[in-house]
Image (cartoon, rainbow, N blue to C red; front, side, top):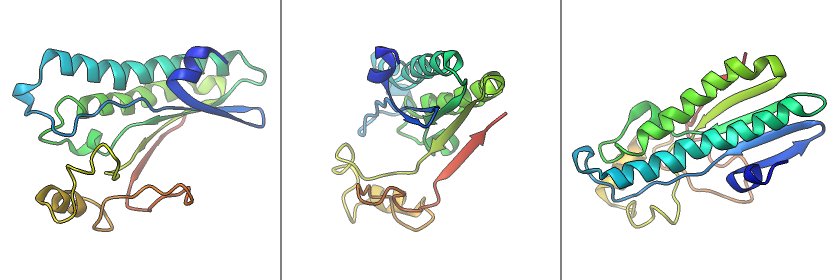
Length: 175
């Protein structure tokens, strides 16, 4: 396995299959309106979120194609924002839509090698990055809770591998 793959994505072996999750993410919670996005912020977000996912996907695909037996699974982490957008996410949303499209294209191109490519589109999950922005009782928290199927944002749990079943969309693009 290449060192680039280890650094840029998470992978593990399941029997003879390799599974890769390109998961590098850059998201600024107090983001500007689209007309105020600086070229630097745009470039950093694009490079981290989309170029990082591409580089990891390419490294994984090369490994999966060259191993015996060929094949594996690449799971790109997109976002529900890829489908619904966001007024203060003009730099973030296009990169996550790009990850979704990348997985669709790779599924078509890599299926002949036994490589499945899928995208996960999680909804809003409370993290250290957004805890200040999504304080309980705030207007933004109420808005974000209202966008979720269960009426609340997700809360990660290490002991519960499935997390909340909060209406997250899973897009599958197998050939």
